[in-house]
Length: 420
Image (cartoon, rainbow, N blue to C red; front, side, top):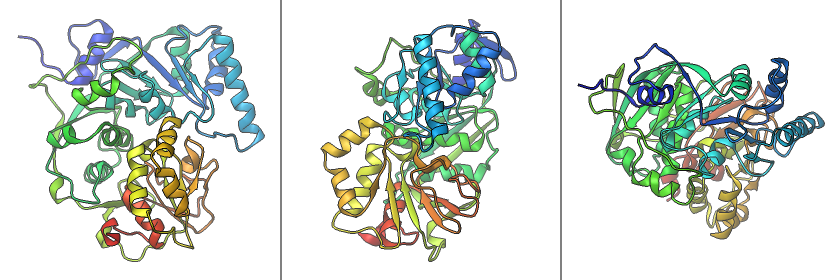
């Protein structure tokens, strides 16, 4: 009888040319995608210091300028120029310059992360691409330099966690709340170097945009990768988009997991991650009169069209609070175009929102909405560490797009149902 395997075991065994693997084994694999962003110039320096001259396979590289885009300083602009020079010299075709959007969103949109593939990225939120049924994991810059040079890498086979999600979401509750609920229960290191699989009727009911919140946020639980099994929604999304043929891999029904977590979302209420930890989670209903200075809707976690549309529905005929800046930054140019076409952007601007160029914006504290000392931000991002948005003396609350939009209107943390 064949050895039953989890998704991660199956993906790594397949790429290593082995019949089976077990957690803890080290395997040698060739990734299908090597993702990097503004950090590509630093990786290129290490690459050259190693004695490498040409990337192993330019088709595997996918490079994005998104973390400080447009560049807020000469230093950032010079970094971008170095990346462009490298891309040109190496003949890398999958290059997405300033304005295309956030690497994780664009990689998926462009059909570059496919079911069954191995996607490695020099960014901690690379597990995002697991929404497409890929084994997607973040690696260090030095590791990425060697992947560029050699086209292969050693990976340790992770243990796996299975999350079974059931029930229907109540109004004001989104995939962001499911992720925060799991992180709160398991802790910020609850999935350290593990593969997190999402299963159940609730996951099947979510659209691709909501699903990607779950795979993305598992980076905040320490996961090596996170996966949503391929179904009709995945293949429909990839139709006309996938850059090449793919073969989905599914975990075996009787695979062995380190643990199984069950979540019933029917009793879930909107949650907020309080400063300065992502696992410092409290129900919104228990938080009274937390005043805010700015609200931020965007990032690779929640800057998608559906998020912008939800915010616009709340803001229609209303105005952003006079004491609040409401920054809206779509995760990609494609999303921005669609949001302009369907009137979403017009509604947000009419209410007083400030629109930013598709990219990471203030998420990591470079520019485009950095808070002042002592200020409070409510954000749809995935991190709220002290100083994450560039200002150590400020506070960041993480919440879903509906809460962020409602709070922008009232000037304090607010449940969207209060505005119905």
